[in-house]
Length: 66
Image 1 (tube, rainbow, N blue to C red):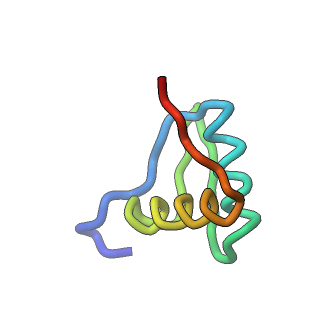
Image 2 (cartoon, rainbow, N blue to C red):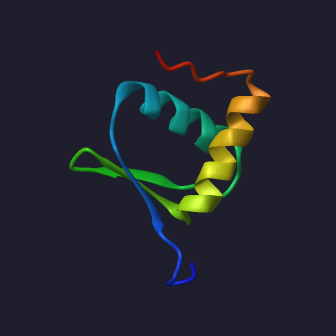
């Protein structure tokens, strides 16, 4: 990973746990680890965002806030 890219690191929540597990199973090469309530991935923030977006689209998942 390029040292100028921000790592993927996010606080653990139930909904995010489910989405990240699905993303890991859907897209090869993604590693997601949890330590002390924080998720980290082997992908940088932009790559992980694209992977999660692809997973949501392929499973027809829509985020609704409010």
